[in-house]
Image (cartoon, rainbow over all chains, first blue to last red; front, side):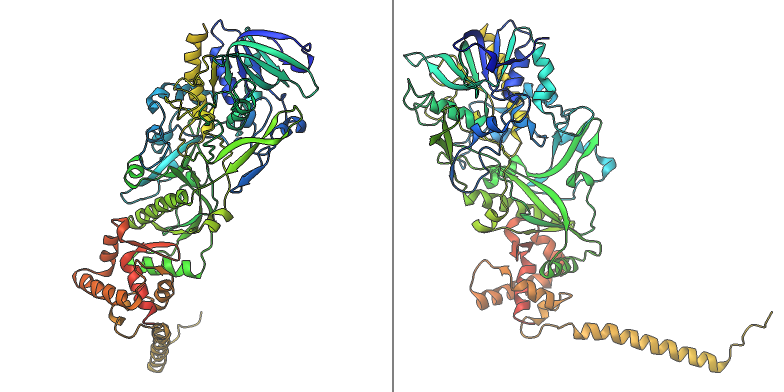
Amino acid sequence: MSAFIDARTVPAGTTIDTDLAIIGGGPAGISLALALAPYPIRVVLLESGGMNFDAKTQDLYGGPQIGYPYLKLEASRLRYLGGSTNHWGGWCRPLSDIDFEARDWMPHSGWPFARKEIEPHFKRAQSLVEAGPYVYDHASKWTKSFGPELKLGEGGVYTSWFQFSKTRDSFLPTHFGHRYADDLKRIAHLSTYTHANVTGLRLTPDAAKLDHLDVATLSGNKFTIRPKFTVLATGAMENARLLLASNDVAAAGVGNGNDLVGRFFADHAIPRDCATMVLFDGKLAPFYQGNATVHGAILRATLSPTEKYQREKQLVASLTTVENEVKLDELGQAAVATTTSALGIDATNAKAFSIGCGLELTPNPERRLVLADERDALGMPRLKLKMRVADSDFAHYRNTMKELGRQLLAAGAGMIRLDRKTHGEWLSVMDWGNHHMGTTRMSADPKRGVVDANSQVHGIGNLFVAGSSVFPTYGASNPTMNLVALTLRLAGHLRKVVA
Amino acid sequence: MSPPPKITRRGMTLGGAVAVGAAIVAGGVFEGRRLFKRRASGRYAEIVNQLDNPENAARIGKTVEMITPDGVTMADEAARDLKTRLAKQPLAALMRDDTVTLETMAEAGGWVIPLALAEICVLAEQSV
């Protein structure tokens, strides 16, 4: 077993040749290195941090922002081995068919391939994120002993299922760095460098290929990696930053000939307490408010619009979670009493619950990352986020919730109050998933995407991008397991081209 | 051991009077609650009083987001429509019919309710 190499100990000015360089030791970079382990490919994995959090390294992430309020750039991700899996919540669910489709009501939507392209990789991805058996929407067969699913009338919303990553013998989600460090060390032809910050992607003079990588440490050391192929896997913010900042040969940055790098930044909006749900009999199976563990799968039920309903009503994807029991105000009590009495339903044991949501944002080229004037400790320009959110996305979600309310009443099971309507009301309860996506979006057309269907940067034959930055649309599923599946697909491609 | 108490005619009469008195008091309280619960009056009363508690309905009616803002005209139209529908089926069935599609659902203070109920609540607001 070989130890990781601390980049601060590499002699300054060294040039390291390799078949493949992976920039970034998060879930994408680690999954890629593990997937290539059986093949005779010399791989260098470059991780900016070490094994644990370090404030100076984390500060490299900081940057200004304007527009719609968003999380601090240095607070919504983590810069050490394992990347943002070091603080993820472990929610997993594969993307749906519709998430890959070009939808005429959603501008800029659509992947260059259908879901079936990454379908074969979901089970291996499930294994890497340690989410147990692959169950998802078949979970209701397993959870009957916990109680029934919510009774809903026929319609557009159904009980959907998430699963959770876990570290063995614990309920914590899998932190990729700690979990897979030993596995990485066992790979004979892999060299993992910690504290190694890539500060430049240097192209050949004709800008057709990546020539070498500039690497720097916070201690002042500098050296060079000269790879035959490179995969950029530093997350949707840093991927954009490195491409934009590497502007010595291509003035707009690497892969940015069509001004797309950094655009279409996305996250899942997670407004809290956005609705109230009343169940007339007060009975709610525990897997709606929390997790149920069955046969090694940690399951949680959510409520989602069906793909058919999304198409019919032209809605964005969303998930709805049942949160805490709440007390109704006077109007709420009147509404429940009046409605149930008119319907002839007993509501003596009624209970109310707050509702949370995860919401897909419509792709928007103006929601973007650009380079700021200020520089970090390595001399790299910091990122500046221009955040925007369309009120129409919240209106979409409101329509989905209204449909849920109708279905609950149709079943005589409950009712819904929509608690947010205006821009200000949504803003007041806004939170985010820390799911950075979209900044190097994938498209077969170089005018519409930064990378092609194989994740290769358009026009640069030996540079690839891994991670959720390539997602052109992203549904309401958490990205980690999906980006791992997509990375495994990329590994299959690289295995052929690098060899 | 003492002998069992004798049941006298006087005792039975007194007991009966107490029971009747208690029933009257209980009935009075019940009826009084019903009487004190404000009933709707005016031209929509027949419809509104189908609800158990018109006062609650009026409270909801204040928050209904109606399709047209044309107050009285819309209320008259709604009342006519409701009368026709209620002649054919009971209120509960009418409400269940409305829950079949989103187009016949309304919002009141954010609560998603059947349109028929929302309309009755608006009528209640004008009647209680």
